[in-house]
Image (cartoon, rainbow, N blue to C red; front, side):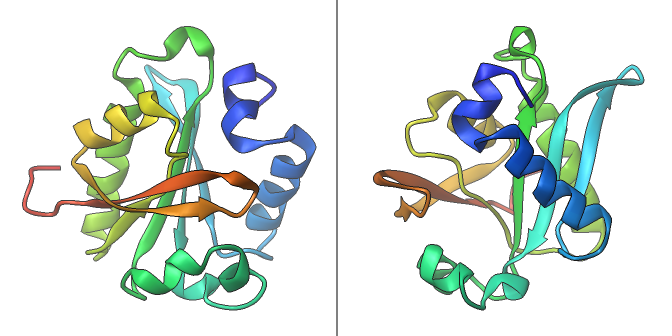
Length: 156
């Protein structure tokens, strides 16, 4: 989490660790995971339910959530080490994670990269996501997020 590429898109390490601590200790319904390759941790991925965030302060911070199906699941991920970027690891992890979510009954899966994060957007497109719309980034007023949705008609 201290890697520059991680902090660029996620923020301060201690803040993010606090969020993950809340998840692990049951104060947040978001489900955190590490993804592995050959038994070695390669990155972080999480799933969260839109319905759980349709309350303040989330609605004010991210009103775009009102534009997607209430039953949607949001996904966020980051490859751990910069040397592993651009090697297909993120899209492969996302494809596997999406298979798990679909097996659990999820039908609407959303991901919301920064609109300027071209590398992530390409990886998410490779995993079957397509752009829906841009929305203001609640953390950076001069930036936008690209709201993307999984195409379930594709092999995941």
